[in-house]
Amino acid sequence: MVNTRILEQRLGWRSTEEGAEPTPPTRAIGHAPMLQGRINGARRSAPSAQRRAEVEDIWASLPLILDSVDHLTTKGKTPSFARGTASGTAMDQLRTQLMRVIADKGWKRIGISSPSRGAGRSFVAAGLAASIARLETARVLLIDADLEEPGLHALLGLTPAGPLESLLAGTTEPEHQLQRIGSSLAVALNSAAVRQGSERMMAPEAILALRAMIDCIAPDVVIHDLPPLLSDPVTPALLPQLDAVLLVADGLRTTPADILESERLLEGLVPLLGVVLNKSEDRDPRAARRRS
Image 1 (cartoon, rainbow, N blue to C red):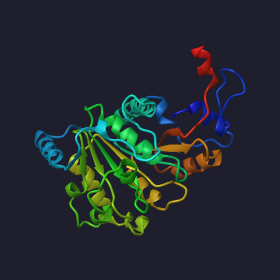
Image 2 (tube, rainbow, N blue to C red):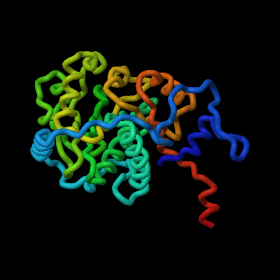
Image 3 (cartoon, one colour):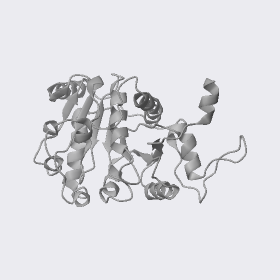
Image 4 (tube, rainbow, N blue to C red):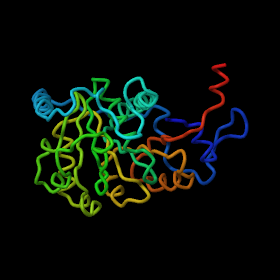
C-alpha cells in the first residue's frame, strides 16, 4: 500500500551507493515531506464547556447510517480497509504519522489528492478517515470534495443525505448534510455533481458554508477527498481551505513528471505532507530474504 522504496525508484531518487542520500532528478521542490519528522507549531485553544456541550448534542443528532466504523467497507473490486487487513494495517501506519504531524502543527484540514484520476485517492481518504475514527479519541469529518464527479458514496455503498450544492448555496443547513458512522466519524457525501464547481468555490457564500459545516461539529480532523490536481479546476479553488495535502500516486501509471508537476502546483499554496504509493504490484526482495 505505502511503499516508499518503489516510489524512490520510480522517481529516480534511489542512491546508487549504499548509505548515500537519494536526490531528485531535477531541481529541488520547495516542499519538505512532513510525515518524516516532527513539526513545531501552535496548538489550538480548548473550546468552552458550553461549546463542547453544543457539539456533543449536534453529533448525537446526526443520522446514524452505520453503528460502527468497523462496518464501513468498500464495494466492487476495491480492497477492504477493515481492521486487520493488509490495507487496514497500512492505513493505521499512515494514521500514526499523520496524527503526530497535525498534533504538532495544530492542523486539522487535510486534503487527499492525486495527479490524475484512478490513483485511489478516495480509497485512501476513506481508509485514513476510518482508521483515525477507530481510535475513538478523535472525531473525523470525511468530505466528498470532488464536486463535479462525486463518487465517494458509490465506493462506500452509502446513500448521501443530498446534493452538496444545496449546502454550498446556503439552502441546506450543515446538520442536514452530515451523516454519522459510529460515534467518531461523520461524512458529507454528495448525491449530484456541483455545476461549475471551481466557480462555485470562488463564491464567498460557498466558502462560508463549507467552513460552517466543519465548525458545527468541530471535528479533530477533516479529510477532504479532493479531485485530481493536474486535471480538475476545482482543486486549486479548494486549496486555500486546507492546512496540508497528501498526494496519492498510482504505482502503475503515475510518472515522475506527474509528481514533480503536482509538487510545483502546491508550492507556495499549501504544504505537502508526503506521497503515498498505491496500486503497486512490486515486492521488496529484501523482505523475502528476511523471511527466509
